[in-house]
Length: 142
Length: 142
Length: 142
Length: 142
Image (cartoon, rainbow over all chains, first blue to last red; front, side):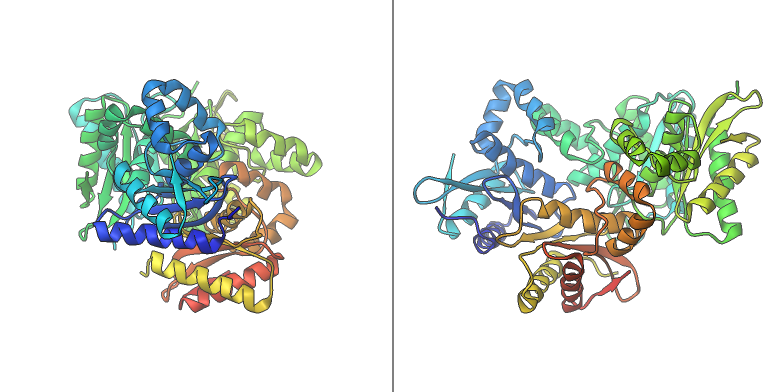
């Protein structure tokens, strides 16, 4: 099983932000968490607002907490808003139901961590997260 | 870069409450925060209810946390209620999605703080906040 | 029964900070709370660090919560540290056991609010709070 | 006034971890915060335990909250343990009273942020933080 080393996490962060520059998106904040939901690496670009670190962690942390991407959590939230809202206060980093929190698996499909991105629209955030994961030679799962 | 000194913050508070008297609005509570979201000055008028300080801080603090006015946060909340609701538990002062939390910039457009006002309707709260910012020779941004 | 109006609270804040200038103390933060422990007025001087508003509120709020000055709470804390420590998490504003949180009574001895001051040593903080209360024509109680 | 850009924060993180390799210390976690206490960059080395990000943030964040290094906070904590303990619950990131949380100032002595390091002994943590700050051309203050 591959582990999300700091080296791998840094590759993900760098590639995520590189893609956001290529696409001309707004300044982003990226967080990479290990499978237990604990931070490995985080960067907040100049101009990204002050709550972005917590939002990035709560997208990625929420995805790990429920075992599905934050895009799917957003879909659940539109069907069952009170259920998803109830999870925030009992989750160490909160649960933010918006795309941009992506689960990472190794070649065997083992869950090894998650990336959370925030700062532009949720779709754009997620596009950068996916690019970051791919650049590190890893796979995303929904 | 201008800093929100106590002198400037006090001017904002005084002018905000002066405008509310001129307009005959209900008693208000005004909070002025530095760019990191920390209180510089706060006044609650006689008759304003007990949670008003927290609401004023959560309007201004939410605006700083997301980098947009609480009026815009209210618009986001009507489109994506579960997303905005999820930010409360992960934000130090909470996020109140209602007009009246206004970002302050200096002449160069640098974000230097925020004002939060509550007590009357959100539109009236915001009108007083804008008057307070203008009276201190500063500019509001959406 | 006298009520801590915003006018009275503002007098206390102004006189507290005036005394700190006379005595050459460090920049202070002053909070005035009503008898329910809710903020009426708060000012943080330039150079006072970012947690000062919370500390000022937790000195004054702890005093109201227990019905004794924060100087007495500090004495209790040295005798029964775990008891006082246990109160922080169950108190809305926390309980800071250090002098500078002073209860205010009217001429009939009725509890009408509290002042919390922080920024210099606890003794100096308290000296300014007492000067502020006296300047407003009110009395402190231990 | 210099701002802690992501570029500067990344330099601090890299140099801090470089020094820890040179000195053969245990795996570390480094957090760089802006003056409002908000994360700019964070890295946790392989083998550093799961709470390290929070400890790094609570060393640096506590230093900013009180305006003194976490080494000085540790000294205060040995004299007044209940006072320092009472600040944890009212501080957004907590307050960890142990060396390794260092305030950063620019050439004019303006407070521009803080570094928090944890993973080895507090003295070793602090030595790496100081090396990181110096490598970025900035100054530490006690």
